[in-house]
Image 1: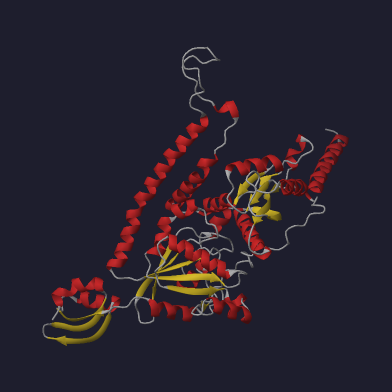
Image 2: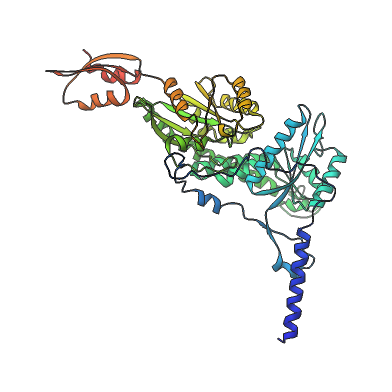
Length: 510
């Protein structure tokens, strides 16, 4: 190839690159409907504490794995010439978020939209813009009204977005009708949450729970594509009058898909049910040994995992994103007077949590329902903590944990002003203010847990033979020993024990 030909090819390549980059830099003209700034759920970049003993968060070995599984950016197909395919850009999914509100203030609606933006960012998308409409009810056909839907189409075309996300659960007909108007993919809030869960599920049980929830969501949303869905005609296939078995298309592909989904859902439910005995055995072992349990519950991204790491150095993944933790993590801790207890980090809750997820993750929520104390973590820096508290208590009620003693903890106290503390104190007068990042309030929280944990209440008077030193050790480790004397026949012990131990000590009673 001559130098002249090489120069021409290089020039053509440079022109193609310049043209693609110029197209990428185009921005909306005349549309700025969503304020700039990060979503409210994402206040600041997360930091892992230094290993100085005061702010160390544990090793968090799975952080690198989580980052390696982050959604891969898609290839842009906005090309003027197919020969430019090698110059396509690698980019994330670009989305526009939309919402309809019928009651409440504009501020409440914007907070809800910002939470949706945070969900989209966590799922790996780039939020370009947002659009709100106030109307008594969403349009039964296209969710937005006709004029607003046309405005949305103009915004999508102007920004080059490839997805629209609605801040509610759309009916299948609404999604299809809105797609026909805006000409890009339309999904809803539930689909985004399910996508995040599918990315973050790690354990075998967690993956099964997510897949079950996804299939329950997918089942009523299967789409057919006309006659191409027909798979069986039966008998002599043909038109009218062609013989027996030709009077209908028979079973269609969409019906086959439904049957396969039902079969797979039944298999997943069986698998999850088979995993239950192992969890029950672990809980029964803790109950038999009278080990009290504490469950950390709260809104997503409130700082539950950070709090567990601060208390126990558990090394659980901490990430400034929503639903970073799906699988329950249980660690051991002890009170000031040496009483052991377990503390469990659980999956976070969110407003309008899809019903499919509540059902699928019921086994994980059992950690909350079976606990002796619930540490309810609230993001103190959030603009609307009251709604977070209400949401979490509603989900806890669905899980059967409404009557369990609760300690409300306002986390991220280092980001809360004195005036805001007064407002939060008005919401929950007995709450504890802590900062998992700085360690503020952690001693007060541990003292509150110590005070509310069930204590041994049955007084016993025992004479334990010297050959049964294990009994004396158990009394010291898991109960409260009042006095110890050594006599000729054995160790005379007076103690307060848990009711679970009383029957096991009858043979040593005096």
